[in-house]
Amino acid sequence: MPSFTSPTKDTQFVLHDVLNIQESGIPGFDELERDFTGAVLTEAGKVADNVLHPLNVVGDKEGCRLENGVVYTPTGFKEAFEQMKEGGWTGLDMPEEFGGQNMPYVIGTAVGEYFSAANQAFTMYQGLTHGAASAILAHGTDAQKATYLPNMVSCEWTGTMNLTEPHCGTDLGLMRTKAELQEDGSYKISGQKIFISSGEHDMAENIIHLVLAKVPGGPEGIKGVSLFIVPKFLVNEDGSLGARNGATVGNIEEKMGIHGNSTCVMNYDEATGYLLGDLNKGMRAMFTMMNEARLGVAMQGLAQAEAAYQNALIYAKDRLQGRDVTGVKNPEGPADPLIVHPDIRRNLMDQKSFAEGARAFVLWGATMIDKAHRSEDKDADGLISLLTPVLKGFLTDKGYDMTVQAQQVYGGHGYIEEWGMSQYTRDARIAMIYEGANGVQALDLVGRKLAQDGGKHVMAFFELVKNFCKENADISEDYAKDFIDPLKSASKDLQAAGMFFMQNGMKNPNHALAGSNDFMHMFGHVCLGLMWAMMAKSAQAALDAGTTDADFYTTKIATGRYYMARQLCSTKLHLARIETGADTVMALDAEQF
Image (cartoon, rainbow, N blue to C red; front, side):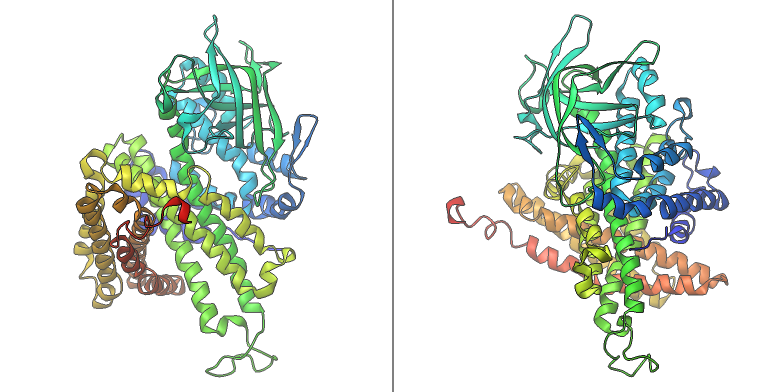
């Protein structure tokens, strides 16, 4: 059975040594002392390691079952969910007035990584509830907030998001689910939604579905979509549960992974719903949930990569296979451990440098969300809006790749279910698809986000990188050579790609869109390059100050050097592809495929 240990030490390093959260000036961050965050992360780690992780294999093997309209979750899930609720983990960063602890979003994100790495399928139940609660918090009336949020923050009631229909996924303007206005101001919701994570289960008293639907007579396409609160059980005026609503589960999807999460076909048969936000402005309300969910999915890519890496590392140190070509390293044994071989080292360094860089990137992004919300900083909001498709698309693509590489370390055992490595690959695969498939993330980045606010935010990113390089170029000759120079070069590649889009995309939009996936990955590499430059700077400062943990910081710098030398240079390949334009991509007629 695989093992997992929450990386609390590394999270603390990023939060305090790299991001310096306590001195950031963001309201509430001054209270995030190292001892306080350490205590929170340590306790979260205990829950992840000791409660959730042992259930990961159970959930994968048992899955969920549907009996007489009720979905039963795997053995142990219900009891673990009660522990999560009792510990207050479900409302860590939600407002105190609704029962939350009002901690910054960045702390919720750090804790969420551990929970997702330990058991992604389980953590989705509370994760989706958090997103639905955030949408109600942002767009609901005072009465709606009072009715739903206290029980959702505590996860006595859970939440879902209902977008996809059998005939439409990304193109939501094609949806057929309708909402008909009633005399009392409520709506009757009718239609079918598919791929609804946590759509029905036995762990909560009520499930609050957020459902996209069209009101007859409204605008055509996406402009006519509204968002509705549709509870499984109607809620009486005194807060007690009333009649069962016309929202039922039709089936549980049989999936490649995340078997412990109930992915449902949901049928709405004149179910009572209540408008959330403005009529025909459903996508604006839903995107409050979607943007949060996309950062959460980015974190899932990191989480599965981290868990898979930890196990691959243990196996590489234990498994005896072959001899080191430079000399025997295990003379008492019949062979040397796998980790002596350069290609295994390359594989592990790919994983380690990605996971640690991705952790910094995710936490940096979470601080921007806190800055945008707590300081009402529009620049921070614009920058995280730009980076959200990069976080989601790049980290889930690469996170999946890293789980495959972890499998490879095991050789044949990586393909055998008994060893558990295939679950990380299968669970990670969905993150590239849901909350907006990664191809859509790339199109959003190139087609919309680059030009947002006149290109202000992408220019701010380039300026941020430029200023960092300028301000830190003189730290040392080695630092400049190993970190600043590669970062400058990669940033120039990214700017050259953006210039290509500007010069050629107006004449033929396909020239930009054909390179969108490469651009998203190029952008991701530059972001991780920036994170590694920041981490190496902080690690060197700790060494210069005479730290008692020199091994941690020297290891950090060596890992960063690897990423800058072996991964960041990928920007040149991506640029070369982008500059070929769309001609070869679009050369065949549809009939020629």
